[in-house]
Image (tube, rainbow, N blue to C red; front, side, top):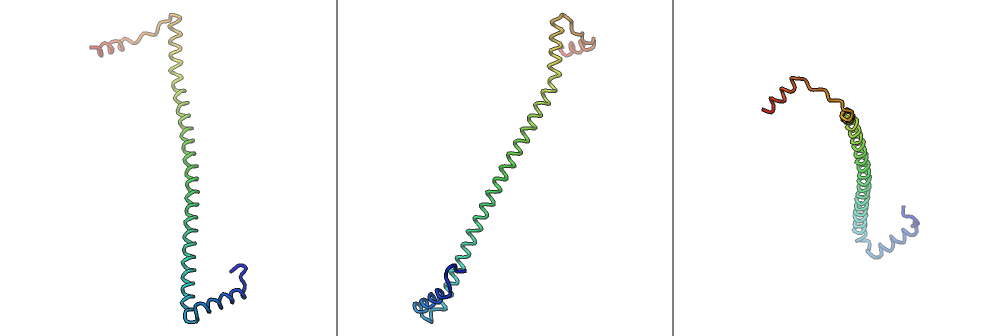
Length: 126
């Protein structure tokens, strides 16, 4: 409990305290010493608690950073997938344009629109 302090050392300290404070003040001194030790323990417990809270918050902050990084990576993956899907869907349009250009090069005319479609276009112009 007291480390290297044994019974003879404690007895010597008790005698010195008894001589310094006297037998009448000894109970007050013991009460003051008890209050001091209680306050000291309370302060140490509060400091220990504050340190543990900070360590916990630090761990939670690291954990939140890991979660944030994982979410960003997941969003990046979904963004990449979205671009790939868009490119795949646009590939049909690209192929369509390439075929149209190839037909134009070889002089093959585009199919004429249906007669009803021309009338609708004329109606829109009026």
